[in-house]
Image 1: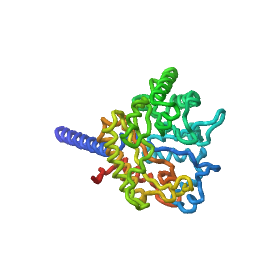
Image 2: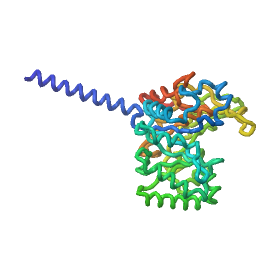
Image 3: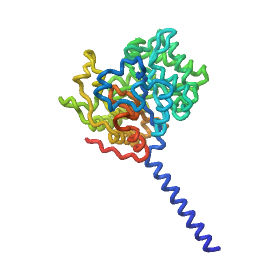
Image 4: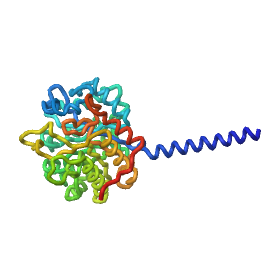
Length: 366
């Protein structure tokens, strides 16, 4: 009896220790982080984004399914790949449409809804309100109707129990509506419409890059949060066209700290995995001679995502309680920031998976 009692007691101690070890291992990783990636749907048969330079000179960026990924079968496979790597959601770039027409750049979102695997991955909208897709007072009501129809779906990502929507450009909103006060009034009507649809509110975020006037304007316009799409310009310095990706990672980590100090609004950090848009160079954009980063790999992704996990865990007062982070990007293959598994190169998702399981602490240079 006594021996059995001692063995039982010892077993309980062992189980308790194992349980503590499991808890500690969980706390060291990124399992409680909601990590998502921006999804750009520019990869269809008729897409002008699949340029000859991209296919001939940057073949390592080609997804294992081929360049054309905007179809149901491959959307299904991408959802599986993303969720298996630990991603929690896609943030789909959303584009305005002409009256009674659908914008083909929103096809992936529709295919996501049709996918039998969509319960594995949440989603939200990034409103791409830039040239060619401006959000204006004229299309505001029609646009907000479409956004709310997305908000009420079960898989929509929420912040503070409210659907998260992100706007790409604060400047374009102000230019289109006329003033920060006019933007705020539009948001007020948007929130009222959402309430009338049975929603408890909306979490409205905007992409920012610096303290300056942008952060002040984000508060004046009535945004609830700030975030970013990418911060590629922060790591460029000197005259060399090629810049080590370490420079981007170091500068971006410091920028996260600064942004959270400059604004009273919660910050959703975004990690710029890479920037090299040479495949899309033309006479107008100057990408042929612009700066770009070198060193993109599984190892660099591991470092970038580790930094994001570390920052989120150590800055709970400056971010959302859900600890949401974003990656630029799932499939900005033309700009060199991609996680889609490669046909001819590395599978960058391995870096994501490793970082979420066992992240390394950042060592930013002063």
